[in-house]
Length: 147
Image: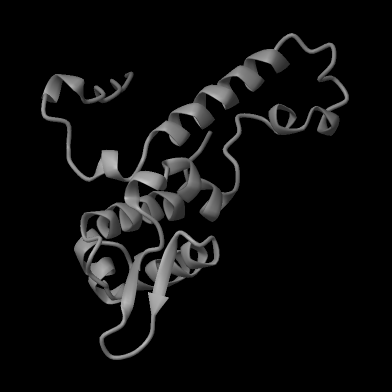
């Protein structure tokens, strides 16, 4: 599964909004704070608002806020709003897209991986991402580069 740059930016925007639940943040403030190009932020916020994850308030004092409690918004919600359901292979979403799915020995692996990814994304709320892990040992190690 590939998380697009736009989805990565959307997650960062959503986490920032979760960190400031009682404030309205302008697109410009979000762009500057999260170091995201302004045009990306505008497109992302439109998609998040259409998905009812964020709320847009117009006017001089307007801006964006989360439309729901951060604990009720998962990474899965954000990913789906921006790039659709995560998948490892088209056949893992719909076996009818591949004539070989029925007899393919790899098909069950793709389906299991898809379910594992979805489960992890669904179990991770924005609230869980508003503070870094206390113990550095719990952070994921960076993959080593070969060569």
